[in-house]
Amino acid sequence: MKENQKIVIIDYGAGNIQSIKFAIKRLGFEAILSSDAEQIRQADKVIFPGVGEAGSAMKMLRSTGLDELIPKLEQPVLGICLGMQLMCTHSEEGNTTGLGIFDADVKRFDNSVKVPQIGWNQITNLNSHLFDNVKNGEYVYLVHSYYVPECADEIARTEYGVNYSTALHRDNFYGVQFHPEKSSKTGEQILENFLKLDLRN
Amino acid sequence: MLTKRIIPCLDIKNGRTVKGVNFVDLRDAGDPVELAAAYAEKGADELVFLDISATEEKRKTLAKLVLDVAEQLNIPFTVGGGISSVEDVDILLKNGADKVSINSSAVKNPDLINQLSEKFGSQCVVVAIDAKNIDGNWKVHLVGGKVPTELDLFEWAREVEQRGAGEILFTSMDHDGTKNGFANEALAKLSEELNIPIIASGGAGKIEHFKDTFQEGKADAALAASVFHFKEIEILQLKKELKAEGIPIRM
View (cartoon, rainbow over the protein chains, first blue to last red):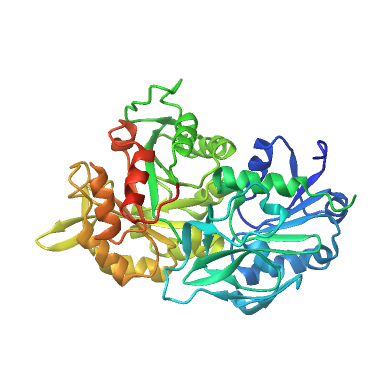
């Protein structure tokens, strides 16, 4: 793993960014928060967080031009929680179009289950280097009311009333519905795996 | 499968844990950061920090504590105690808290729930409700259960859900401190009438009580303080036994 790699967390006013920064620090790396296009383009790794509401988050991305920038990035990009949902084609939340990186429509859980889903659930059908050294059925921490139905880009699955895609991968883009920064040792392993990816070389 | 959560609660005063804590392996049992990390290591699914200090510096001290905890902790945590404005919540979430819990301030100003859920999302808004059963009716109480109100527990719970709460932390004042088990009948009713997660609090004394609150009380999570602090119940052992009973638990 590149020791002095530049890790940028995209800062567009959404959510609990501090926790991601601290989680990366615990792994021995420094991440910087930035909304600057040039700084983001030059990063070795980009993390795209998000907590809150999809419609207003997309508005913030559009107002800063980040909606144009993110889909064109070439280094490994990891969307977390709402970040992953915004990387999809469309979201039912706020009926908004997304960044269109993953070919999926984000939907709300129906009322046969408690909404939001809050807590630790299992990830299965793991199919990516993002999950190296992570066992099938390990637990991760999730907090969400909307989900990505099973789709072609799926690299992990979770069950909550329905089976849904809890992690996605296409080209240099990765997305996880859960919070690796809050998912104990399993989450640390997944974050570390992401930092190990080196698509440019 | 989504698992049932075990949540130790730490009382905080002026940046230090309050209740005597019987953790021989800690260098400083009064240090919330060290205690939090120890609980995470022992298998706690989440932590709650309840700030009971009443000083002018309270906001600053709590904000600093949240930052220190977030730096070390790799599981989610909630912060509560005297939070009464959007500004209070903003700083706590920015410093790394996952959720905030509001109680009396929500009763005094119910619109605060709407404001918080609109600005930060329902997922980080926990409404804590303390209630007491008076002649068969569950009445909401304020100020740590000292001040009765005319509010009915179930009506208030429905209202906070509609206003955008993401979770309810229900403490039965009749059960709190008794170590005789949780208020499972009221908990089950809350769970059936609402569609957001319910955290059971008040009454934990034995492992069996946790089993009962998950099975009979239909709780999504159970919170306790002294049984964990005094090691009357070890979290790992608790989780093993619950799992053996067929309850979904993260090991």
